[in-house]
Length: 414
View 1: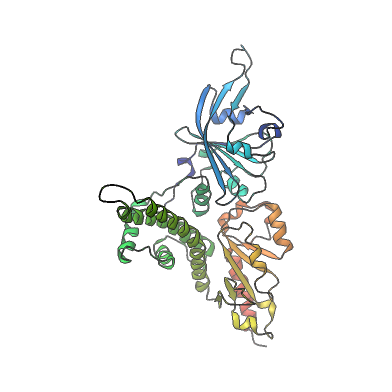
View 2: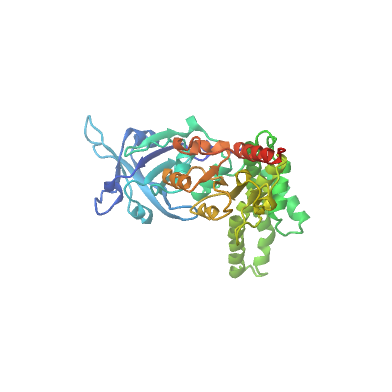
């Protein structure tokens, strides 16, 4: 499937760590950033008054806050014959009041001239993903760094679109016509009801241009997810258009309560479907590798790992070598939910967790290592992780190979 590119959404970004005088009212009320070379490359060298800007604070997944505002770009020494001193003024608002020293600040320019001012708390789970999306690198300090998007024009895959969603930006798709046709066919086949996740996932695998999962399970997984996410968005739109008239009276008055319920069902469906969708695709790759497994099998008490290899029978057989057992948790994003995996499958000391999260903090990685948890991440997302993750972070291909090797040892005679 053809993908949109980041350059359609942004022309450039400038990134820095906030200093105390920029972030904390007790330290200063200056409300200005020094107009460094990086900012001049982003904004130019002409005075610009009250440029429309959206301020966004990203505390974590679905924990954002936004405020509309403006920025003013001016030369404080514009009347001086030989010197210039550019500054970027911002008014006080809810977002900047939440900012702290050391937080990541990103100023991004859209093709229509609108500016995004994004504040990400230092060490948050979204920080590595933001740096990865804009290809800035992790060596961000107190001075602005500029990135020309045209020179690092990223394709917007599933992981990139997830981060853009947090910024309130719909990346769209260059294949919306094809996706709309598939969505309408699905709705007709289901009698107007929203089709199940397994049906949508199955169609995505059938339609996506994906590599053979036996050879490249990482690429196949991302291609399936890319297609399904784009299809799901068009499916939502088609379903909404189909059912919207039900919430308007003959006189043209809206059924506000009905519309709110429909919006809530949209949000709940989005939250619940992603984890289940990912499990469906992971299972398809496991089947392609012809591995033995149980999905959601009980281990101890209420613990049910997403995938248990070779299965529950071997796990509960105390004569079976525990070194040949493997478990895999599956979570599209992490937050602190990775800790849930630690309590599953007591016989298996090293846990594995597959995620689509584009990067985690070094602190989180250290915690996972101390708790014998190893992340499994599709190869295309490895660049979003700190270099210290090398050797610990696993590709999906590597994980499947590990399970196959253990099952071969279990099946060996003697």
